[in-house]
Length: 557
Ligand code: GLN
Image 1 (cartoon, protein in one colour):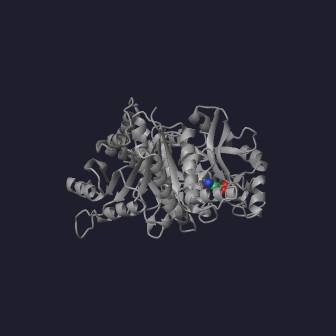
Image 2 (image 1 turned 120 degrees about the horizontal axis):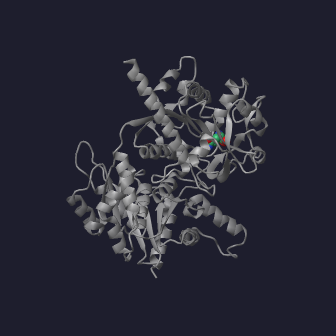
Image 3 (image 1 turned 45 degrees about the vertical axis):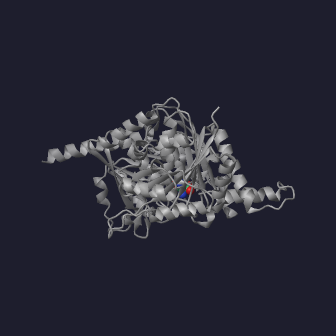
């Protein structure tokens, strides 16, 4: 029997070099060769999970079926591999430390002195092994977050080193590095990568593969130079130039023989190839052979850190839009709109007209609420397809209560606790937790079932009576108002099995081309090879609008 193999992926030179995409791509390539792969993300920081972090600081919080709040790289793994991952596939420094300290308090170490080494690496290795077992995988790919040289990753590199010592032939190290081409010099520099290798060596580990990220492909000379200075063969240095789309990365790796080299070093025997890579290629063909475009405005608030626009905060939403657009043969054109720009009398709301569809994604807190409500009102009245995700659904209900039912003070209690019409309110179980100041893990998290009413837009999109979707929120549609809101025309087309929780709200097709919001986050399960049914339905509605818009323009001429 083939022994279990472990591949550690670490980053050198700087953060943001694409370790997550490199790990996801390698996982995909090995699966295409018939191996089952478990990807693991380790975030060395002390947060126990990613749930309490601000998206502008950390990027999107990606929620698993289990409800664990994780890093956005987990989203990449799920999207590339096309399947849900387990909580064992994610760990943070905080979680490891907490587990050890809790165990110590429970006398789990039987009177021994509990020390960073060996107890931290031992716990890390235990978790890595249990993830592989749960997945029944052949290979585990472990991405260690952060950059080589940071204090916080030392214990994780030590875990990797110990695993290599006990399984010398079964552990492989990948260094994802960066080669700058400074403008003034116009020449690609290898020195930072050489330093990264040296830093890695100082932890007692040696890379087996270097993925050389750069703006352009690596030439033969650079490959030779890196290989020679790092004690490697040229084939172990993989060129990874910037690409148009992250989905091209697996194909570039394959072209540079990454899979063959990894298999050779780990002495993996060739298995029957699966059709995965072929299917992947046909998806990529769709992304380049689009005819026409679909224009989507995303109205949110987590956009700016300094001068940079951080599309990262809504990564899964963007991907969800892209897949649906590509599968419809259209190029997605996504524009960011800061909610606050739609506030005040002078706001240029009419510019929303140029969009084929509008999304208000998830969010928290007060800032930008007025703007979002105005956008939703405009989309409803002007029949622009609207898709609300979580907060975007709650605000859709608030807007309807205010402007259709005429309850001017209607609000979510997240914004106004004293309103007479709390149409969105916190769930009773959660109220206690919040009163105690316990915010971590206090939301409805993870996958829950919903029943879909027949004859609705949601039911037609899913073509199913029951669905499971992932949640991350504290507030819900207040059941006390459901009957009145429905009487006024808004339909709750998805509800929890006990009928207490409203999961989807929509206007019937006869009243609006697409006006639908979900309490859950469909974006977390949108996949490149399998677009999400609600995103598909939304994009189709957008395209119908686009066609109508064009016909109107032709008539005018
Ligand atoms: N702030 C809202 C809530 O907590 C919505 C959360 C979200 O959009 N993820 O219920």
